[in-house]
Amino acid sequence: MNKKERRLALFHVLSSKAQSGDLVVLDALQFANMKTKNMENVLKVIPYEKTVLLALASRNETIEKSARNIPNIKTLAIDYLNVADLLKYKTLVLLKDSLEKVNALAQ
Image 1 (cartoon, rainbow, N blue to C red):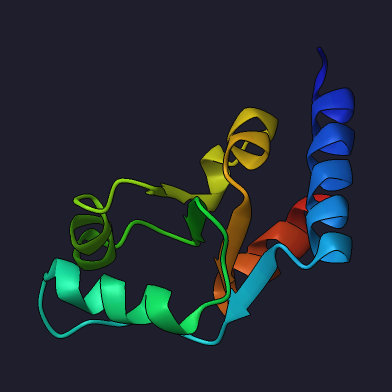
Image 2: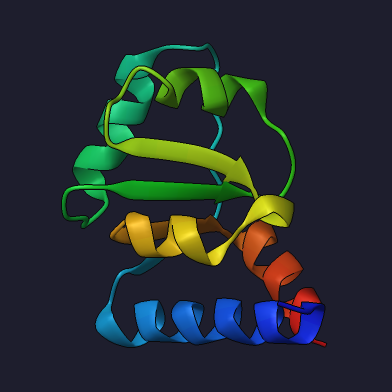
């Protein structure tokens, strides 16, 4: 599969998630310390079903370590976003700066 086909498939899956309401955009996500409880509190507020894929604009060790003990959540950098993960995880959570990075990929 070449780059254009991969990008097109990625944007088709992203648009279907947006249409079905499985795309959640947050302004910011910052924790003072690395605790799973912090991420659990965020997940209580976010409307999601079963599994969550959290795409970050850049590496954030605090968020990644806060989420890694929760069984149905995966964090990854937006540069590594792929169709397989988008299809595997029901809800996609993007931060505002991640969304801007995705829009930059489209152009």
